[in-house]
Image 1 (tube, protein in one colour):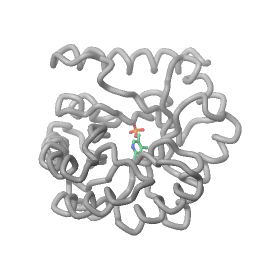
Image 2 (image 1 turned 90 degrees about the vertical axis):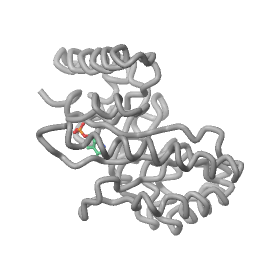
Image 3 (image 1 turned 90 degrees about the horizontal axis):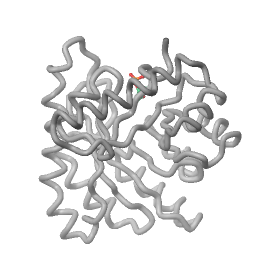
Amino acid sequence: MPEMLADNLKSVTERIAKCCENIGRPADDVRLVAVTKQASVDMIEGVIRAGVKYIGENRVQDALAKHRIIGDKAEWHLIGHLQTNKARDAVRAFSLIHSVDSGKLASCIDKEAAKMGKQQRVLIQVNASGEESKFGIRPEEASELLKEAARYRNIKIEGLMTIAPEVDDTETVRPYFRALKYLMDETRPLMDSLGAGSGYNTLSMGMTNDFEVAIEEGSNLVRIGRAIFSD
Ligand SMILES: *Cc1c(COP(=O)(O)O)cnc(C)c1O
């Protein structure tokens, strides 16, 4: 693995650990998903050898091509938007789909997972900032979608995901991360009452620019690309 990549990965891991330490959380509370949409197969295999356990891709077809070569040495996560017509491919390749944002998509994933005899782990994507360009449900729609998706037996809802706007001052996105944590706490009784509360505990938030703020606000899964793969 190029030295640059090893150094970057070490630096990211250390920043996560330091941030956890500052707020009194164990460093292994936070899973690191290496986002490899810009990375070659060689680079991905390099970071897996260096200990990365989770690989995030935002396009199904790109991920499938890489997955065919690399296989299941790491857990594959779909972090980008998913169209219903790609649900079958997504269910085939991904351990965790971060981007469920409609009942229709949940239903398609459930059907494909049932055919494959799989229980598909998913997160619900929430547009916490209300930016029009972003996918995801509005926070006030969460209960309705959770209720619907929790009925599907081949889906396991493990939590919520959000993408913050790109800004220079990361303090401005803190409220969106806080809102996602709040939404998870607020919907937990509902999930418990639906018998779907166990394992409903993943908050996927934080990227290169803002992962420390996200961790401070309760993130336990950060999705980091540029800080690892760019020089
Ligand atoms: C690209 C991407 C990331 C990683 O972004 P970086 O700024 O490169 O860390 C995280 N999440 C999603 C959904 C992405 O598309």
